[in-house]
Length: 462
Image (tube, rainbow, N blue to C red; front, side):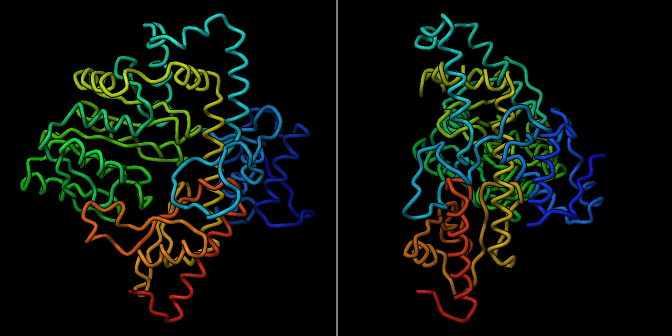
């Protein structure tokens, strides 16, 4: 097993390990394609914490020495270092003004350079006009095959016939609701849910009924009991890295939810847009009830936010209704965007870009753990966002206003609550939207100061 020597190095331990990875890759001690040791094993060998090695691997990925692959590990990559979010410029986001912790978007990274290479390759073909026309049957089949391959990265087997492409995951959720509900139907969700779903339900004339959860994780018994009270038909949930709490449902609970869905004849809409982030995760809910689950994901979170391509996997009878809903709402996803996504999945670019996102998310979560007292912070170490529970003398709305006054934008829990009057006293912060790490650090320090002020006894409730 590769074991770096750290005795002659200076600086933080995680950076020493990251530097050693880069040097070993450069001088051939770690050839291209070599799999790095599992993080726990290397932590044990070096006598450091697992968190230190996690940060080291994230830093090495961000510097372009290695790439991560979900379920496989971390590998020495070919080519020069990738641009990092410590040196922004890839995406057009403000580098001055308020620090925005309200937008849950991917981190700026090397997607721009990848797009340049892909567009150059496309320009050398004679098929450009086809991307300005309606999709051919061949294009549809190829894109469906790429989509199925992408779902395989998170452990979900899918056939091309099961796949439906949309204009991003949000459009996919809307199409799923259009295909499975009628005005007046009941939509069951967690008590805290993805905010746009509430707006979608309102426009479709649906009644949203919250189901008791446990820290963001849907409770099977509560779901079963809810079906005794209301004629529930469809359940929308986020089993992996729940928005806003970052909770992840374990495999036993997924199996139990699937059992309730079968018992009650429910259709499940599984939102898995963050499912690519954890290096280890339970199988998708769709694996436990494939015959009644619409699985939703996209490349907009994993690759680049402006790449508006979503992927739905559904059983054949529901897939037909989904295609009709997509046709009514957008006709089809833009063929050029679908082509870019498919090419990136096929040639490995998508794995590199999503690996960058995983590494940067892990690094920024480590920044949050350093800045925010643990009694307030709840976050999965691999998520784009974090959940802050506030002290009693800081009301969430007042905290948001004071944070804004000090130049930081956050979102209170009420924005996600089906019943805002019962929302917890908490806020969500998104760590990935800001281009520069130093602005993330500045924003976290500002929030930590506000929490400290409340802890010193000041009353912040109005």
